[in-house]
Image (tube, rainbow, N blue to C red):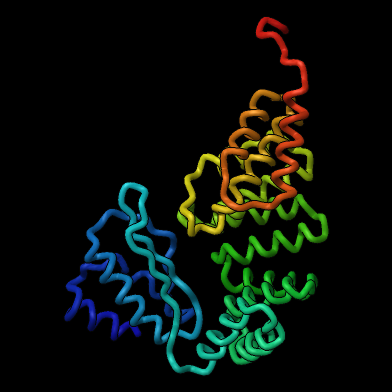
Amino acid sequence: MQKMYQHRIDNFYKSDVFLKEDAFDEQTSSINIPRLITMGLEKSWTNTVTLLDYLAQFAVSGSISAWLVQDGKILKYAVVEPKGDKAVVQNFIKGQKLSSQAGKEKEALKALTVVIDQYDSHAQAYERRGYVNYSLGKMADALYDFNKCISYDDSIPSAYYCRAKVHINTKNYDKAVEDLILTTQKAIALQPIFWKARFLKGQCHLWLQEYAEAAKEFKLFTARAFQKDDPNYSSRKEAYYLLAQAFVALKEIARAREALEAAQKITDKSDKILQQNIASLLKELNGKTREPAHAK
């Protein structure tokens, strides 16, 4: 792989890539790229992604994400993963697809277990199998898989996020918060999972009655302008409602009202019970006597 890398650098890209030779780890036979933020031309970004996509076909596992951003706007996004005809690769692709299909959980488990039997250190296969086990309510199996995933590759944000959900299922909110912090550290703000983790972390703080921390998370979440195709877009209304609950607990009634009024302005489809809860809490707060401005 290194020989082909050098050949392409010399003959195709003339070193106009962001990838450096120190990314190659001979001891583990892998490419390891720490988080990298750099300035460069679109051509250099495209060259790098194309080269990585070529090199990935020598691999059996792993994933690299790349974003081209200008003024905070994503211009291009790419995920580089092995796609070759190796049995491990093909079985993982099959299991990965099945894991996202309702009613295919048992087939997904079987395919992903085959991958792990073939290549025990396949971190992504453990993460996907953990997700399927969680979906089936097998919390102990899910926890095992997420722990194994992280032991082989500690850079996968979804492994921490899903492990946090396992802890929430067992009402271990403190541990869930720890994993959600790790999720935000391993992800970047351009990824939906970063904000999903912040939202869930806010909920954990509410359950732990840590209202100031909860308010902090929901303020950050509601200040974010999500695009309609972002999975966090549909959670904006609930985020304002939960922010209002935190403010009520902190006795910041005026700010709670503002949050509820902001929630009511979001008119896209949402849970009817949520709408009723928002209206009920706002009515309750509006019924309270407003404290005079000069009162201590």
